[in-house]
Amino acid sequence: MAKVLVVTSGKGGVGKTTSTAALGAALAQAGEKVVVVDFDVGLRNLDLVLGAERRVVFDLINVVQGVAKLSQALIRDKRLENLSLLPASQTRDKDALTNEGVGQVIAELREKFDWVICDSPAGIERGATLAMRFADAAVIVTNPEVSSVRDSDRIIGMLDSKTVRAENGERVDKHLLITRFDPARAARGEMLSIEDVLEILSTPLLGIIPESEEVLRASNVGSPVTLNNAASAPARAYIDAARRLRGESLAMNVPSDRKGLFDKLFGRRAA
Amino acid sequence: MNLFNFLRRGGSAPVARERLQILLAHERSARDEPDLLGIIREEILAVIAKHVNLDPDKVQVKLDRGNTFATLEVDIEVPNRFGAALAKTA
Image (tube, rainbow over all chains, first blue to last red; front, side):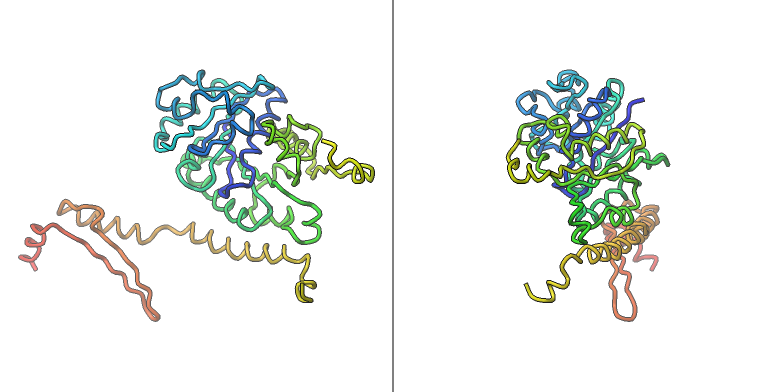
């Protein structure tokens, strides 16, 4: 049974696209057939984070409007044959996306893939509501910071009311992914702790992604962080999160890249 | 950095947590309440529409909150014909 997953947050810049790419790649590396769909019409970026920006020919709107077939618009990843991308349109006619049109494309993707991961735009407007509309499950990306937590709460309310599942009296499975977490600052009381965020949002935790240079390094070169450096702390955290999405139950921890004394003295620019 | 800031250092997360808890409790209750003004507007519109074809945008319901009581103001713009017919029966 294919699963439709929306990666959403309300607030921008918290790591939705990074998380979509990393979770998509991790699931594909585990043998699942995955498509990541960019819903950020006008501001697409998933193609860039995945290093596929020069291979985009057709996009989601072309498929919805019948200009292109789905198979023409899908871009298969060059490193992971199980991973495909359906890019967003860079032109601004986001009104071209209708509930029915998107519903048809999602239904077609369900036939071809095990996971359909929808990368939501920021905000609570049309693009965001369309991205979540057909979801079976949601990953809510949250930074341990007041504005992000507030916006996540708003988005959780929308997942419970504006999705097809909610309208049919069913539930969307919600998972909280805390990104840019700094355990040392949280321990010093300078940053909301994991327990604080969980208590406020009362949503089950999918994973904790530590703040790390590796995330920028991976996006610089157009590679999901789980592929670019699978041993790095954020990659391990994303791989664990992907395993939890597949139903495994793993102990929750915050992977760290803590360096030894030698690395601290000599190895700072090792990568 | 003054002494006050120094003493507060490391303690800002509990402030964030408390502010969020208060704010979200408020926002959640507002979110769950039905849109009463909207419902009243729809029902008034339905009653008038039984008798006359009405542009839905011509029914305005406003709430003014005073110190001791609030005023509900209902403003319905009807076509002239219907206004004349009403005036006869008044």
